[in-house]
Image 1 (cartoon, rainbow, N blue to C red):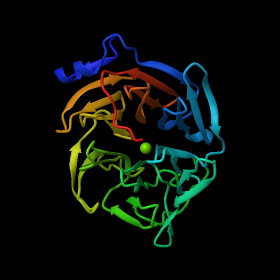
Image 2 (spheres, rainbow, N blue to C red; image 1 turned 180 degrees about the vertical axis):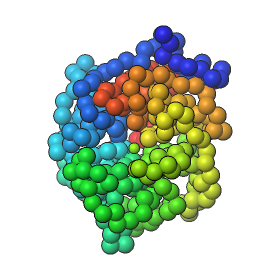
Image 3 (cartoon, rainbow, N blue to C red; image 1 turned 60 degrees about the vertical axis):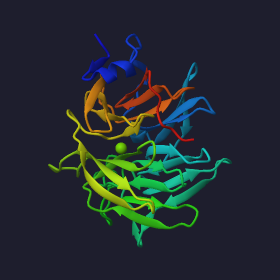
Image 4 (tube, rainbow, N blue to C red; image 1 turned 135 degrees about the vertical axis):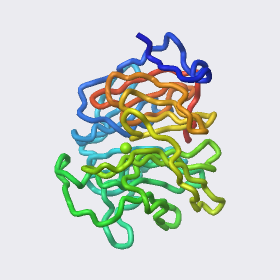
Length: 299
Ligand code: MG
């Protein structure tokens, strides 16, 4: 059985025919938010229902990084390498300082509590962009069912000034995020409101010089499943989660090929010494495949 389903010759050059899609660890309940720490030589990810951030280290396996984690979901690193986390339970975005202290980046907008921040990216200017769908407060799966106070928006925070802006206000449930390599484009997945027939797709926005967004048309529709999380490689291709694995999508919106994974994938990140390893959080397990392709990853 092949680990890959190629739809375009370009994809054949991205994959290594005998590189396996390898299960690295399993036994989790719902994993999300992978982020690679090359300096520490480890992967961090959320095991959301178990209220913990898990650390996977090559050769050593799995240890607990933080528990409780306030039901953290998506993670990234800022331009100083600090961990930035979306927390469902505390309904906030935080930054973990180098000394371990936790700084709250955002927990409200215009006096109303955020819903349940889901995924986050940091732009080269240091601004923090995150999505705030309502998934964490619509049910008591995590014990935090609550009234929704704000629409499901995409926000930008400038941690230097504290300024916070709602950048996308017409989404149903914004989810995974990624900038194109030159940051001229922002990709935003919309996975739709819980208990609804909302369309699920990836939208593409043009990023203006002042940081304003324009456009926002549907860029690609994942089939089967939806895009919960995505990352971009150095050539601008998207690597997005899907129900049958990870889909590679060109910057034109064309499906180039699939990495087939035996569990539903939620999110991905690039890691390894050359950022050539794709780490995948998939339901109860994490997987890795080595690619002939390098991810955009900062720092
Ligand atoms: Mg997500």
